[in-house]
Image (cartoon, rainbow, N blue to C red; front, side):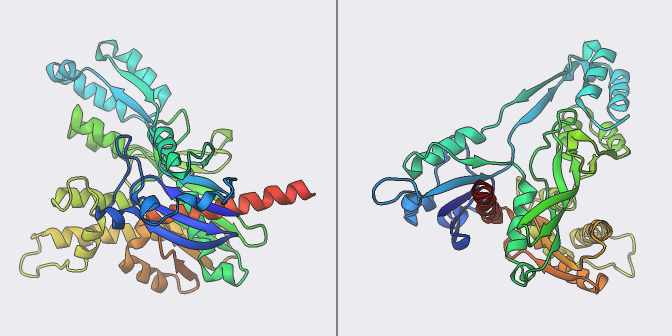
Length: 399
């Protein structure tokens, strides 16, 4: 049984798995020589499909199907928020009141409705815009002899966890583990009350016997949406007040009874990305790794304690990210008191300096870092997930 996993977001990649064994993992950026390549509706085809000759991987010589296709991606749906900018610019006092209204509590659809009623002249609009995932995936399927059916689950962090655990020595030794997935921002939150939040940190329980990985805790951030609103309508006022918002914790049927934190603080990974944009390293803020490397050169000037340069700012960001990471690791340990095996995955796990410091901070833990922690590894994680999902379905049928 063959499975092809495809990550169709940035760091686009393709994994070929046969009977649970990884045969190949290709990254589209290497084929195109385009760093962080991401497909779009106007250019969705994968070059690696043709160049590596994998189009026939799902078809037998007689034309019958011999495998399945699964996509790992972001959820590109957005809740677009719009309002009358001219009205705000002409009414500064109203703009201040609106900023305060937005920063009273975490942004939700209910809160948007309340603000709309409170400020009818604001012309506040918010509409769901369907994503492009289906169109992109359909176009990619045509490369595989027009495969009509495929799997698509937007548990972005789950695929990170699957990739990390099933590549780890813990799995090889038949041991359970806990996994942490963290990055700049993963899949969009499907919670209808909290639009445009993205998963930034999550903790997972990895069970060897059941070949199962289940979520235990998640954190969602709407920093990107807040940043967009701030720059568009009321920079300074709204951006500052939004960071004073109290985190909202939801743990009910709407979150599948998984403790979920809704916050307006950016993820540690997004802090590095934002800084790379501010430093001019990349027009899209994608050079987070450059800032991580820059942090190693940060130093304070003894004769000028008030002096700051890019390296010092990067180092300060590094320190803050380490402190936050330690908080998440301790939470994982609280949720799994009898487990000493920890897997780290997601783009933030590319921070080699922090990874080494975890060993010193948590000597009681056995720590393994996913060798493909960036989004390119989610193609691998998706293939693993589908393989074990099919196994369980087969076992259920046999029973």
